[in-house]
Image 1 (cartoon, helix red, strand yellow):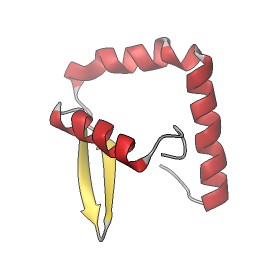
Image 2 (image 1 turned 60 degrees about the vertical axis):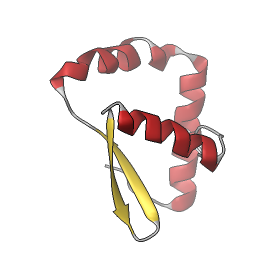
Image 3 (image 1 turned 90 degrees about the vertical axis):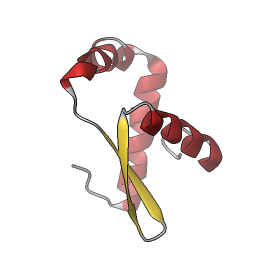
Length: 79
């Protein structure tokens, strides 16, 4: 939410769509739900789209900057 600067409702709706299409999976811990990309060779075109095309867009760069700032504020180590 903070990285993309969108509401919790909008984030949940988009994540639900990604889960229903089989692109992400979720796991629940207490009141939190954590989402992860599903690794699947059939989805390599998505990796290519992101890594070869989207990473050069200013919005993507801004989102990564927001993510880095959020991680720094929260002092979280992401794998």
